[in-house]
Length: 78
Image 1 (cartoon, rainbow, N blue to C red):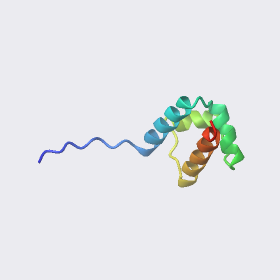
Image 2: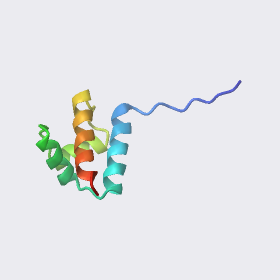
Image 3: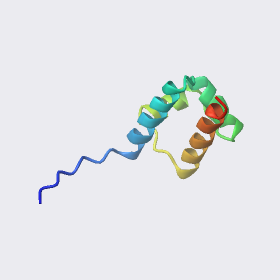
């Protein structure tokens, strides 16, 4: 049996790629995502979102939670 394993993508890059794609698909600006995160207790600016999207930030569980809630709040009801 010959199964080729795909190279694992580092978590920061995987999260960043997802956030960027989701944000663009739903036409959410980095500023709006930062504001939604701030409303949930994060201290983000546009460059914080840029760093997440570019994999330059290793997300904690709390950051992942806030990202999910912020993205959800910006897309629910659209």
